[in-house]
Length: 123
Image (cartoon, rainbow, N blue to C red; front, side, top):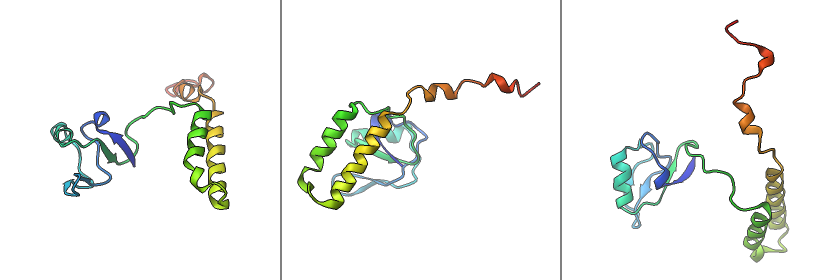
């Protein structure tokens, strides 16, 4: 499941949650396959985000540096500072941010390259 800005939605994508307007009136049911006309209609109804099945849109990596992400996260936890459970959660998130920032950025590019040591499968 992925929340996607409506300007990135394409025909053929499928809703994972129903779409409702500001008053709670249903506009589209869960499981609806989106068409170009339906996407345009939802835009005219000021729908800005849709929850879609799977992860159909590459949203890109984080724009903020790890330090900025940690600072923002720490600000969010400021009200519960000193609570042992919340401190444990905050520390776990901080460690995850640090671990993610240390991953090799070249890995995805290497996945598409063929391994020449195995030869051509048609040989």
